[in-house]
Image (tube, rainbow, N blue to C red; front, side, top):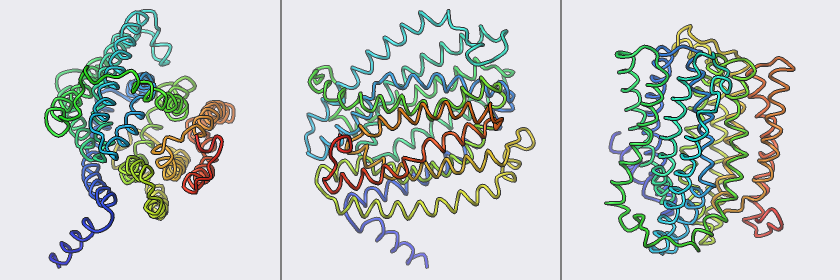
Length: 455
């Protein structure tokens, strides 16, 4: 029996196109690592909730959502590097790949330093208590916390580029290993805080933000001295011409990122402004719960972005179609998994958090639908992103972002659906993409994509 299983696994991970074999190995590694990551995160939520309380936890979640907007400061250069680095590797142009890496690191460093200088100048004048709808007496604490979190986030923006290099080289499992290390250190740190401090938002923010920056910093030193020494950033390889190439593609991803933030990162802010920070907590509990299903599906998709870039550059349409059909079949299994998760949601919430937080069934059901819509759209969006033909996505995302915010306010407040209305609004706004992106992918593969379909 063991021998048969071993033979099957050996055959499964060695047969097929080299691109497929590499993707299979990454998916298997990602699955194993993600299980560990999920367990750590599930332990982290109740521990953090007990350390703070639902209201202060909601404030922390909302603050990090606001700070995450800093991610757009890379003006899409990270995604530009992902595509350009993968293209250079496909053509075996190592010096060009190093030039792309070096140029991106310098550009992002300059942007991050400028952002830091501006933020430290204006932060004393920002009323964070009002921004986060928190008690007024927390203003000073939140201002200090925001400064610390913002600073470490800017550092992570630079150091995190190593993760882009790993994914572009079709090695996302290594990036997940770094994520697990970060989460494990975070869990240990929160546990220590529960023993030595009493519900301090400042020390929680300082600890978690510093860990999130230090781990990728260490990874930069490790990988650019070993596996990626050939591509290590160097001022000698910085090239303004390549910078323009990265920026031209990056700006398109930048606009897409802004629209994505309006869709995916505005929910916490809308909820906290309409109903207070405490309601952000059940929303995020449901998001984390169903995020397990989305994460599992994304694990499968992740290796294929850069693999699609490689295949598209080489004109391997047959492999692209076969891969896409398998992913669509896998999505059907996701539907069954999400349906089952919804049926047992209340029981699992109780096992996970006890009676601390109550999550309405309607919120769970809408979050499940939201995950299925995102997963289906991403099956096609990963290919489209890999080709860099994202102009249509940009215009669609801008429209979706605007509709999502307006519809969220109407459903949540006017129709009194509260946080459930915010999720439902996102579902409605994103639904058209489920039909548009398959059409664009087919046009790109058939070489019939003209106008905005092929830009």
